[in-house]
Length: 356
Image (cartoon, rainbow, N blue to C red; front, top):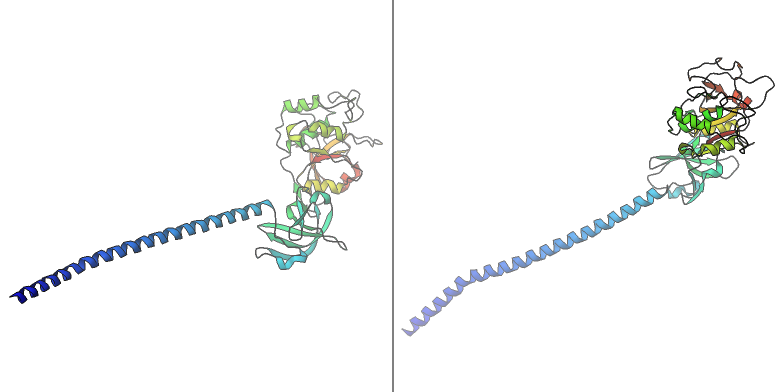
């Protein structure tokens, strides 16, 4: 009897253990799973953090690169550093041609763009080009002179070929007769055209203001003689005084006197090719035989195939043709006309105005 009771207890205890095992196992599994999930979650967070830091660092590097790229035109190799040429640069040899530097506000680069000098030091000088480079959508010319050391690369927008055509179409024609009649006011009318090329609106009140306040003698360089009546006329205002007067107007702040004994008709052409109109001193259609004084101001607004586009204010309308002015047919070309370079050379006296 006692043995049966003992056996029964053993069976009962075994059954209890067997029944309890799944519960324990279940709890253990849940515990392990929870820990695993927690570890995975932490790992995922760590990975995200690393990714964010990596992206931030890359973004900062990209921004730094962009700023450096914007700051300077770099990484274009010169002839001595071809082996350093970046993959995005293309160099091409071209048939040698000539260009002149017509814009001052550009740089000339050497030694993989690590050295820079100002184009203004070579303004209006002519060079040979035998190579060009393309970088970030910009084209650069390699400048050199036969038998001399090359000076470096320059943006093609800073130069012009000898016969490169250019017309400054936004320059308005201004008459010295209409709407303000000033038969001796060619300087004021021509100055108004220069202002108009920079966006100045031409009105009757503006022209009246210009003519009424034109510097006169005894002001240094002032005009001698009334612009309306011609009383006491001896000569027009000097280039220096006219440029100074033009700068008193908002649209004339960059007008300068370029007069010089060294100034050539070629220089006038290069100013035009740079997009800058030129006011020059020459003869009028009223010029009399034996009179060699350049007392008339006109404006050049274009160049093409050896001819200059000249706006002469000594007409009533921009539509007036040759022979409708003072009848001296050497200079009575009409209000707007293409004049041969040789004709400009014949009356040129090295006196002119243009823009910086």
